[in-house]
Length: 316
Image (cartoon, rainbow, N blue to C red):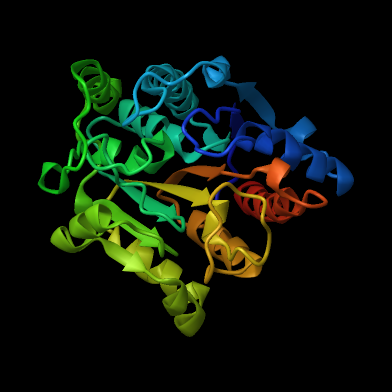
């Protein structure tokens, strides 16, 4: 594997989440690095994306897509930075707060490679395939996959978003000038186990490739990674997005939406390392570390260990 020039893109945004504190996740990972005596954050160039976290101090005007105007700004900034990084032939590692900004990452990859087929491996407890028409919470971190698929899921509509919300949603789906950015058959879920009926409808309708926690434990990380990559063999580029809540809630409480029956930290680390060994993988993202919900910064330490494995795999 060729040695890659890495670049950290820090997105300390949490306006897409329902619980507060994910914006501190990136710094918590850096503190873990210091505690481990690592100089990773000195060695690798880092750029920080301007956030819209001031919106948290105002009431959200849009119940079905909370703070979507801020999310749109974040998407555009993240997309431009990811695209610029890829065009320089550098490998972006996105360290994000909540998972909503992943839609901006996908937009950026698509901007850099508009004619190519992009595969997405989504390691997460949640499918994140809601739209403002279906979301029970209105939290935007449950929507990045739907954004990327240009999916409204009108068949499962429960909400009636106002015209402004719909306009902003349609703009969000078009960030980067391409919609949809991915196809259903170029999406792989690993560890997804907490889905609403509206999401289940889409997962079944489009037969989205999904590997459960039980399958990871039964078949081992190596086979899951191999099968996931084989499923995306028609893609030219692959993006791996790792939400720490894919790990079991017993490991750590340090994430906004912990779910039981997840993968272990060791499985998560091995899985991420195995996936990024594939030459098609062009971007890696970690999100949803929330140190305010944690004891002794445990989740950030677990996450840093995974990040360290990924970085050493990419640079050796």
